[in-house]
Length: 342
Image (cartoon, rainbow, N blue to C red; front, top):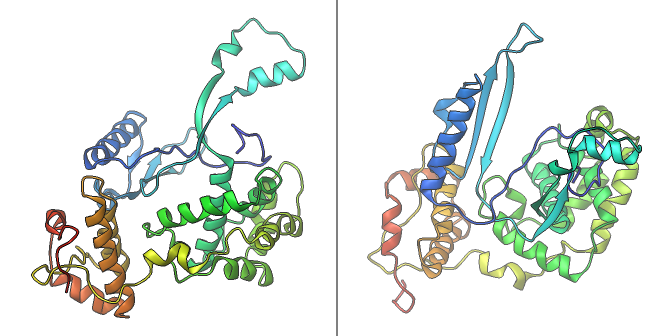
C-alpha cells in the first residue's frame, strides 16, 4: 500500500511476500532451509526451533541478534504462511525513494538512479481491502485488541480507491472460501456474520484505545480514530459488500452424514494437543493439489460433519482424533465420485 500504491502515510513495520499458487511439500522444506541459511549467514540465532515444522502452512520464526547500538539482544520475527493463493495480481512500477525525492525537488546527481526502478507483480487493492476487512474481524473473534488498529486507518485510505460494488462482493465471497481453510482466519468460518462483527467493532469502540495510543503515533499526518472509523469500517458496513447469503456459503456448511464408504475410517487428524491443530491437519489435506478435487472436497465435508454437526467438544474431538493415527496417504484411498456413502 505504501511502496507500490502510495496510499498510506504511516510507519510500516513489515514486508509481505506472497505466492500466487499452492506450494508443494518439497517447496515447504526448501523455504524453511533457505530462511535458516540466510539467517545463519546474517548472524541470527533461532530461538524457537522446536516450534518450526516444514510441512506446516504456517510457521513463526523468532530470531535474536546482537545490536550495534544496544547492549541487549534484539529480536526479529519471520512468519511464513502458505494458506492462500494471491489474486488478483497487478504489475505496478516500483521506484526508489532517492530518485523520487530528487525528481520531485529538481535535483540532479551523477548516479543512475532510474536504473533502480522496476516493475513488480503485487496483490490488487481490492484484494488487500478484503483481506484487511477480514483481518479486523479475525481479531474480534480472537479477542485481540492490541497492535492491529492500524488496519482501521488503512481501510479508511483504501475506501476512496476501492469500488464497493457487486464485483467486490463476489471477490469477498471467493476470498472467504479460501480463508476458511486457515486456522488463523476464524471469522471466515460460515457461522460468523461479518456484518454483525463490523457493527460490533463500531458500537464497542473495540480498537479505540490501541488506535489512540499506538496507531496514531505511526501516522505522519494526524487522522483521528473517529475519522478512520467513519471513512472506513462504517462505509464498508453500509455498503453491505460483506453481507453473505446462505447459498453463497452453503457448500461449506455442516453435512448431515459422512461422505465416506462404510469401510473407510475417519480422516480426523494427527492431533498433537489442540482442537485447532487437529482441524488444521485435515484442512491441509484438503488443500493438497496432488489429490483430486472430489476427494479433497469429501475430506472437508467430513471435517464439517465431525466438528460441527456432531457438536463435539474440543476435548472429545481430540480424544477421537488420537484413536486414529492416520497419515496423509490414507486420504488417497477416499471413495471416488459415484461410490456409495453411508
